[in-house]
Amino acid sequence: MKGFELTMNKPWDSTSEHLLRELAPQVLGSIVRRFRDFSAAEDAVQEAMIAAFTQWPQEGIPENPRGWLIQVASRRITDQLRSEISRREREAEVARDADTIAPADIEPDMDMDPDDTLILLFMCCHPALTSSSAIALTLRAIGGLTTAEIARAFLVPEATMAQRISRAKQNIKSSGATFRLPSPPERTERLPAVLHVLYLIFNEGYASSSGAQLQRLDLAREAIRLTRSAKTLLPDNAEVAGLLALMLLTDARRAARTGPNEELIPLDKQDRSLWDRSEISEGVELLAAALSKGNVGLYQLQAAVAAVHDEASRAQDTDWPQILALYELLKRVSPGPMVTLNHAIAAAMVHGPAKGLELLKPLDTDARLADHYRLDAVRGHLLEMLGDHERAIHHYRIAAGRTTSLPEQNYLMTQAARLAEKKAQ
Amino acid sequence: MKYILMMNTMKAGHGVPQWNQKDLQAHIAFMMGLNKELRQSGELVSAEGLSFPDQAKLVRAGKDGTPITDGVFPESKEFLAGYWIVDVDSPERAYTIAAKASAAPGPGGDPLNMPIEVRPIMSGPPPEML
Image (tube, rainbow over all chains, first blue to last red; front, side, top):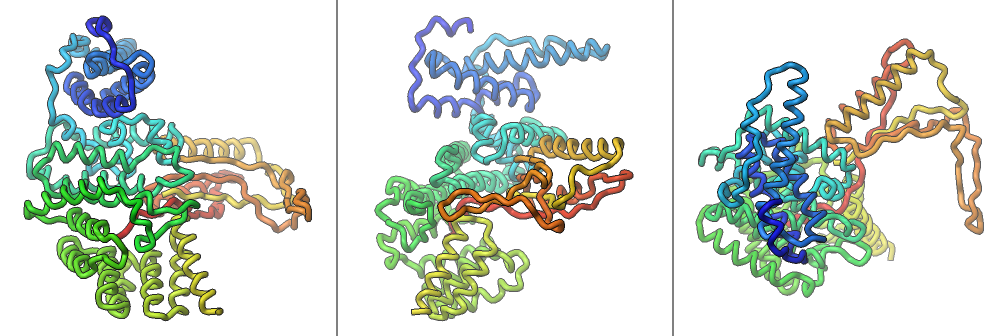
C-alpha cells in the first residue's frame, strides 16, 4: 500500500458506502483494460470491494480510494493468473508471457475512462443473458454489491447467486463480446434491453419492500441509483430520463402503498400525505425535460401517467381524460395486452364501466393475458362499478386463485368477501 | 419465479426400499448429481429429503392447545419424500427440472417416472400497475 499509508484516512460515515459503490464500475473498467479478462477482473474487483467494506469502516477511507481498490484488485488478479500459469507449467503447457501480468505501478487516475461504466452496462445486459442473470451481474459489476447482498435480496443461497453470476460471465465470454462501446446504431438497438433490466431491478425492489422484507437490500433505491448513472452517461436519451422519472414517480408512493399489516392499499385509498414530494417534483421535472426532446417512448409515457396520478391531491381530482389520452398514445407507441388493460381502466373512469368492459373483451382471446389474474381483477373492479356484484365476486375470486402474489391474493379475496357481505345484508 | 417440486412417492407402512446395491447407488448418485447441476446453474434455492413415513406424526391441538399426536396412517396415504425449491426464469424450466427428477433410475436402472408435483411459490406484492 506504498504511497497511500502515510496520508491521514478520512473517517467512514453514512455516505461512504455510496462512494465506495460508485467506484466499483470505474475500478472494474481499469482492471479489464489492464488484464483483458472481464470475468477474472470482475471477481478481483468483487474481492477488493469486500476488502474495502471490511477495512474502511475500521481504518477510515484511504486518501485515494480508487487507487486503493485498483491496487488490491490488481494484486488479486495477478495472484490468480500466476497460480493459473504455474498450474499450466506443471502440466507442461505453453506458459503465457509473464510480462502481461506484471503488476503495474498504480497511477490511479491515469486510465480513468467515463465510458467504462457504459461499456459495462451494455456488457452486463447482454442479449445472451437471461434477465435474472443480467440483473445479478449488473448489481454486482456496476452496483458494487456483494454476492451475499444480492443473494439476500432475491432470497436465494449465496452459492446459488455466485453460480448465477459466474454462468452469466461464461455466457458473455462464449458470445464473443469484447470490452468496447457498442457502435451508435448497436447502442440504439440494445438500449431497450438495458433499460428493461434496470426496470426489472426496480420492480423487484418495489415488490418486496414491505415489512418482513425490511432486512433486504433496497433494490428500488439501487435501481434508481443505477438509472441515475445511466442518465449521466447518456444525457441526451429521453427514454433513460423517462425511466428515471417513472421510477421516482412510482417510488414516491411507496410509504402509502401498504398498510400496517402489509396489506396492499390501492391508489385511490392511499393516504396521499405520505407521498414523497421531493421525488415527485424531481420526477416531474425530469419528465418535462425529456418530453421536450420530442422523442416520446414507452417509459416517458408511463412516467407521464404516474405524474398525473401524483399531481392529484385527492383520488377524485385525478385527471382521467389526460390518462386516457396517454394510454391511447401508449397503444400506438408500444401496443400490448397490459397497455390495452390499463387503457380499458382509464376509459372506464372517463366513459363509465360499460365502456371499459367492452374494451376488455378482445383480451379474452389474447393468449398472453387470457389466464392472467389481472384481467379478472380488472373485470371484477369494473363489474363492481357497474353494480353487478354477483359477477364481480366471481371474477375477484378467479383472480385471487390465479395470482402468485400473496398480498394481491389477500386483497382480492377481501374484495370478494366485502361484496358478498354487502349482498347478504 | 420460485417453484416447489414435490416428490410424493412414499406410502405409509412402507419402510426403506429394498433395492440392490447397484441400483440404490445409481439412484443416490443421480439425485446428488441433479442437486449439483441445479446449484451450478444458479437455480437451486433448497433441496431436502424427508425421513420415512414411520417417523411421521399427525398433530392436532387439543382443547387446551396441547398437542395430540397420531401416528397410524392408512396404507394408501402418500407422503412427501423430498422437495426442491428452484428459482427459474419460466414455468417451462421448472417442468423440465421436474421431468428430470421424475426419470431418476429405479430398480434395474429403469427410469422411475415418479409423479412430481410442481407449484409456484407465492411472492410479495406485484409491481404497481397504473
